[in-house]
Picture 1 (cartoon, rainbow, N blue to C red):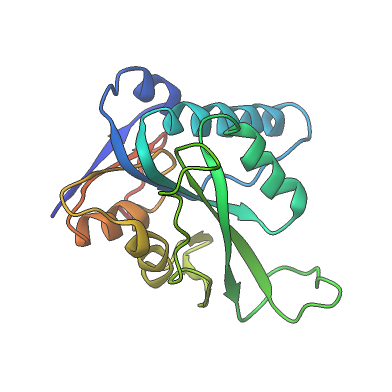
Picture 2: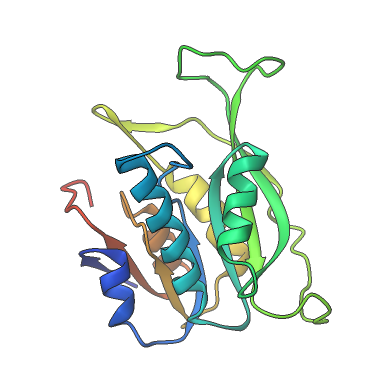
Length: 199
């Protein structure tokens, strides 16, 4: 199945969306705090995640890549509080650290992947997936930019994919997540502000 990229501001595109969703998987910008532009990105991420989650059907999943800190994870949870409930935390381990700063006590860098589901805490349908716990994979670089590896995208999408269902990534970037959803038979859509000729 093919997937569709909608170019424009995610909040503007969401205001025109109007379709129920069976799955959201996204890797948003990691900007949490700061001032000026960084503060604007932080606010946009929070509002976009919350507004996207409102389109999820009951019992369906939202999977969000986060920076591996409690601050980042808590930020994602709070942004969506009352709409989706956090259920599971998984990790993407990167075998090589690509920054000059080496984390104390860690020989690799990691990305937290938060799985949340639409429905009350006591909903018996909130079954925990046993598939998605951890993946180790090197980053993929395109010139100076990093993009989500196809194997990691597939790992994040596969446990929650619904054949024929509606998928959205509101921060599509390189398009790896919508491509993975389309490969699993979903009607996949991605939002991206800037056109990327790698898509």
